[in-house]
Image (cartoon, rainbow, N blue to C red; front, top):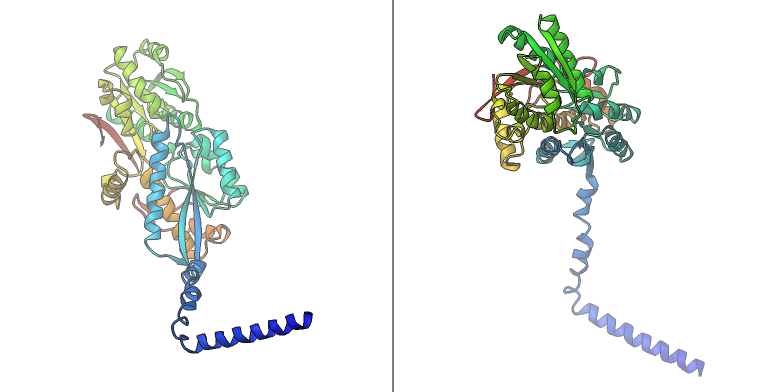
Length: 402
């Protein structure tokens, strides 16, 4: 029985082989191309194998009362990523695809350091951020420890560069320039005599207020009152009432616009309509016009920003038109700087022909980059060379350069 089955199997096998042979001879040309597409299917993957993803981390407050700043900053970085990818950049023989890894620090130092560690662990290739000095300063140590280059276009406290970390860069004027510039204007141009100083106890607020106060005193102005609040407060009636009793010519506030806006409303309610109101770049936003609720005291605001006005930036006008088309009604202050910071990291990578932070980091300090905001070059400590500032006022609710 086994023998019969075996021979039957042989016969069946032979018949099938013969049949297959006949099919291959006649229609051979027809099926022959069929494997070809299957063989070519991986072909598109070959270029993909030559493509390298380069991640740029961005950190800012995209939640909470300062979210409008954070979203504006992130928009600037995203816009740069899109522009870089349109250039078909090749580094180290590979086509580069830039991606953003965006993190939220909610303007909170603890959340900021957690975000920094997350970016280190993710091995991103560089970082743009943070926005607040209070988050940037502690995060900078984490980036230094993991060897990650960081460029900020928003954090202005001078203490950021004091530790001497080689990976930390700032492309905007610091508070020494902002606070002093405002005090000089108050004393020399407006001839003010008495000033009250208030800050929100953050690294940024305290820093810029201290510089303003010291410069004001050196210029012969009298500081008649000092008050403190927080970056979460919204009711300033008690503080402003105390300040009003000292009859100052002006109030300087070191802080951000979520507090400055309501403060301006309350100053009007208290009859302080003739008191000038000074502040750094933290209040120098478009949003403050909304937050002040149409208060007449908005017209008393004089604020300072690092850098030139958009109209005087090398590429400001054209860049702003593109930004507004992409992100309508979202512009605040710092997005041109986060755009430049992102482009600056990519420029250093191109000059080093490497995306490895350890390899391209030395190229950052050698930068001579024509950005949207300025010609970017660095001092040995990572501060921007020849940093300019611009003073602004509000005319009919619109921020206008002085």
